[in-house]
Length: 458
Image (cartoon, rainbow, N blue to C red):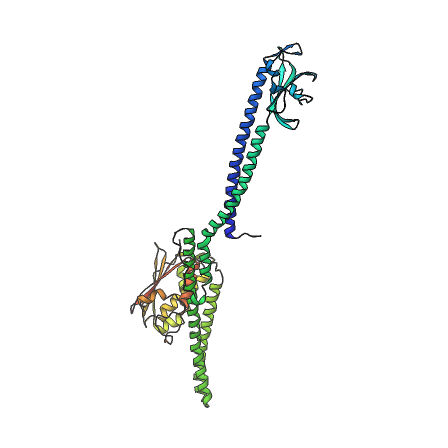
């Protein structure tokens, strides 16, 4: 079963506090436990000193001198805080035992060579025992002394303390669980508000944004990040709508022209020359549709897949010449003069196929929008590794430059312009430049010409 975010916060905090409390309560119990038994062991040690002061021995025989204090009532009764004593020789024979032991006998370790303390029970009464080896003058063990005192009071204190600590621990954990749940609810309230606000946003109100919390914390950063994402989505959404509208318009124009031509031809019989003339017009419009389809398909492929540029060393001047050659007919027809200052040995890192598409689009635009008998110039700046393509064409208004790489954008503001094109070439070129980390920029002056610059990475 998966816990909700609120319950995870409450649970993790509760586990942390429960662990700290367990350590603290264990430390408290340990200190009291140690102190209680240390006190009992000190009392036993004091009794041992008094007993040893009254012991004597002869070879391996223990001699017990008379000890008046052991005739006191506390050593004869078991009921009220009694003190017990037992002395045995090497054979385990009892040399002496206090009267309050009655028929009982201490268990002991006959091979014990050092002082040991342990717990035992006599007549259902808990006692603390200390066992001490008895040495003669030759430092030989000749018996064992065992002294026991009641630990019932210490046991009761420790038992009651344990019950109180356990009960307190459970009670605190239960109280903390409800407190943590309440605090977690308050903590994630802004997140729940974000969830609710985000769930209300759809294509009809895509301009809506998430409310920002007052505190500039992580939740504020999350809301800001989501709003930035919504901004990008909104821009993409409207661009997609505009793209669909523009594509429909671009396709509608030649289709309408083809339909009109066919309707005219069907109204009455025409001469063969007239039919040929109209078929030429249909062919022009069909070629326009075919070109539009090819570019739309190319753009769709570019944006629907992850392009990986296969970079290699490319001779730039040779590539420019290769692309220019495909436009020789248009260059001659328009009387365009070509000038290039790109050195023949300039080598760049690029995908040669993608670079040819980029140059083809830029050069094609520079020729189509150039003036008749104009000039087309290619320059190279070695320091910045920048190729400039300069024309003397109609130019572009400064307020239109930011829109130049948008799909279907035509700077001439006319979709029926005498200049062929559909506004997709520069959009494709920009996408291919981005894939190769090539910076594509443009500067222009209305009526004087346009300059495209390709800055290649190092």
